[in-house]
Length: 527
Figure (cartoon, one colour):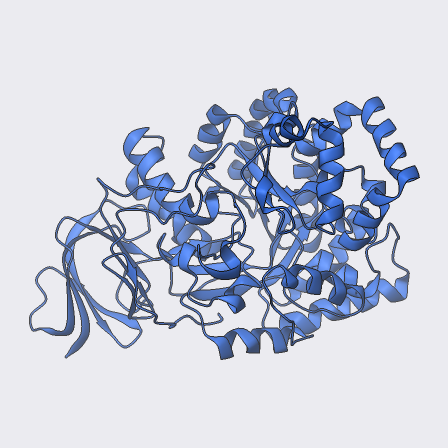
């Protein structure tokens, strides 16, 4: 007998092919049969009449490294239909946490009332396995984290011995289960690294068959140079490249999209092993401190807060802002403080959901002083949503054949410590937003192509075998959604909202979401 039968749905198999009516029979964790009219009952049956049946969505760019340990139910992701997350992005990973990296990661964990109990990648992945997870996890190794382990968070260059030690940590991490290397060259300490340093680490990763995923060095005026660097690293290290959350950031740089498209077209035509992912919003999100000059971001979050608190340094930063506002705008990508929405500052919950400009008006203060004070009071952990992009460009990039769908978000929940922040809506709404807004309403993508960009495209790039497709023998990671009703409910004003129109989500053959309610099942695996 089949363990689970899904009857009467329209199967969109993840390859980009047209949908077709079929039943799906599951035995244990695999799809056993895909056919019209399966004979015989299943131990459990789901009526999929009027629903699309697709592979589970694979999120290539996530930051759930700590949140999955805090709450393994992965509520905000599993309810979107995400059945596999790739963690450890933007150069920051849950492990290894040695040297200065331990203090930095401990400060981030404290936001969620989490005490770290691991040091190595093996111990970290063991923690996830012991805790369990509602979805599958593919871990990457963060370059910034490795650099923090060996060099700390200052603006320094590695000696030959230090480069060798970083390369040893990369090899050890790959042997212990990571699937690739990520960089965050926009953020210190990754920003301080030269291209040769990254090539050395990526080459080690390549020897283990890994991928190189990069938050490139710049997404504003230096966008094209940064893309070229990512391509160069891939060529020199002989490794597959994923350019993270592709965008053109900053109103003064939107004209660069035509040049960017020419670069992408050239890469596609040449068969280069380069792909991209994108979240479907015109706003980004990161730490407030990321807007500071790079010389002021050395030493990690605690050091940044202490530096800003020093009266002399604060005066120096104000002078820098007055003299170099174009550079500040390029780091933040915004016109003014009304486009910076505070999303996380545990010490000042009253400011969440307000812009810097709004807080300044309410308190009759200079916006720059509000900005500085939030960095200080949060010990460098305050973050914001930055309205730095153009909707037309978002849609243009979404259409490109190299661009997959990714959230740049974390697995969260409205309850408990994960619900304290007024987060970017991408954490709750990325995948249903594409299906509802950009497929059904705006027709930017065909449904079959959108599903492919959410499933097999990422599975192929990250070598996630037997997932991302609906076919006999594949793992039974499956999503059922109503194409006429699926929609994101999460907004910038009210982000902690689950989506509509996704009644069932199945992971490794077990029902995790049933009639839009989490069953409590934790069948996910570290892949």
